[in-house]
Length: 439
Image 1 (cartoon, rainbow, N blue to C red):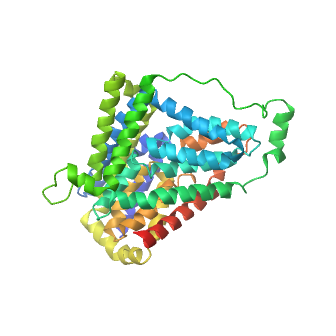
Image 2 (cartoon, one colour):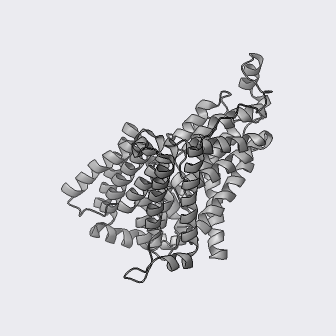
Image 3 (tube, one colour):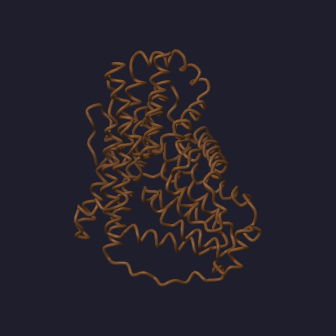
């Protein structure tokens, strides 16, 4: 047990140092240095490389990058902005739900980053405390990612849980509605956070100085979108629809594909990879865009960092926790406890998530360990929002930008803790209830 604790402490040191040195990319790089120590100093057998997660990230990076390069993401952001501005007085409810479903469809939180200025400006015009919709929106974007069939984190979880007779349909049946319920509950919660905007001294000061245009309407010049932008969105969303349809309706998948040697059918992860590359090919064919355009996109750049963040911690975690001697120690010391009290996994996941900022990396570290110790797959689906405990050490771009974009100063990075914990509790409770009642 002592040797395992030493190895985990070394892992934590390299992960925390990597986070401080270079964010998600730093975590991945320094995790590989820790892996070197485990293999060549402690002489642990190398664990499995999380190839499935890495290839999923690559496929999403290429398809999503081409969507962004073709201007399709701009079109989606504009449409989302129109929905948000349509009901300014209900911004605290409308913005989080709009962002949740747009992130669900596109699989990237970049859309939330692009919409935060619109949300802050709309809140001011409606005299709503900007903190309320901004905090709810940032949290909703993270929850939407874990429900998205185009997000590497959700698909990695589906791939891992799929090895325990848990289908993509069951996963979506738990995670999607629980995420929506938690988003709505968080919006209600945020309505009671802080003073009214008109009672904020900073707001009154800016108003007197004429630095706020609170009475300006929402009218703005409508941008002109090209046929290629709309086509790229149609192709990408069509691929997402196909992934959902085949994942949720198994008879159709069985009718159009041949069974594997073991009698099972093509895994959900492979379906995603195939259709993401189909989307990439369709966008290239219809828009005539060069594939090299992806290298200049934010989605592709973020995906490269995410792939490294998954490779390092995922391989390192598999090496430490799957080593025969360590696995035996874990089962003897923690197995019966975690089986009796599976909620402890939520705490473990939250601790890891505090230091590892990649949803996919957290899942690749914690979920194989939890499954090996006997935690039921439906429970892990219900508690998946625990990988979003990244607000205790605020380093997430959407969170930091929310603070920066709010000129009234009501949004502060250390005030995400309580809303984050509240939404986590609601999502887990809703997920467990759905599992027990309907699955």
